[in-house]
Length: 244
Image 1 (cartoon, rainbow, N blue to C red):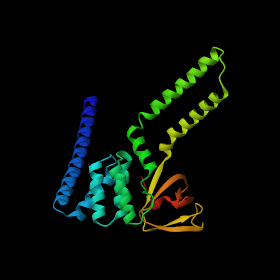
Image 2: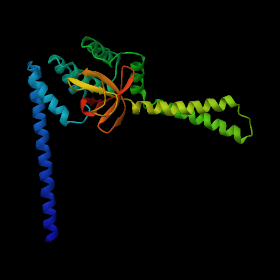
Image 3: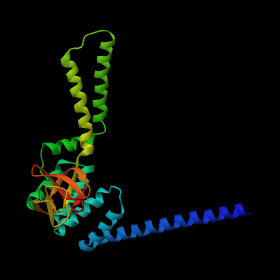
Image 4: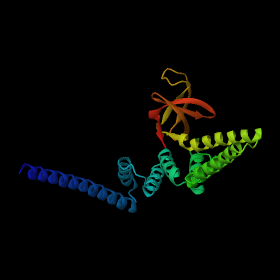
């Protein structure tokens, strides 16, 4: 009798959980439909607030939502927010058109960090085919090492330059495979942010920069990010950046 009662309680609990989850999803769907309706009739400010809330609560990647948020932020004359959403989109779906748009918007608003150059092309190529590049390079590396081991086993002499070439290749391969993982950027989120020479609020201020600049992050230290600004390594508070 006690076992049957426990099963009944568990069933009710599961049913209640499913019902509560369905209610939340239904409410979110209604809010999104409401935002879409507002967007369609041109009530951009109201739609923007709902889309922002959706973006904050939903951690999954949604390109359509990012495009709408970028458009609405641009309409609201918030270039930093618009570039933030486009930067997230560019992380997953980089393209020449997208990076050029970001560069043009940054130029109009005097913002640094969005320059479209050879490195931008490299990122597009790597993010599109990054899953295949490591396999190709590792296969080639295994082949080179295997050939050298066979030669050593057969007593054949390996020239010194071939040894150094192999070491250089493996080192370069290791670096290449780790660069994309360590490449992080952030966008200044506050109207005025202090860049300091050391990770301390008492450190000298190198420069005061405005909202929207994109910085390359090369490390962290306590509540600070170590970043590159105009060719110099400086520090900025973590709370001053949106991390891409």
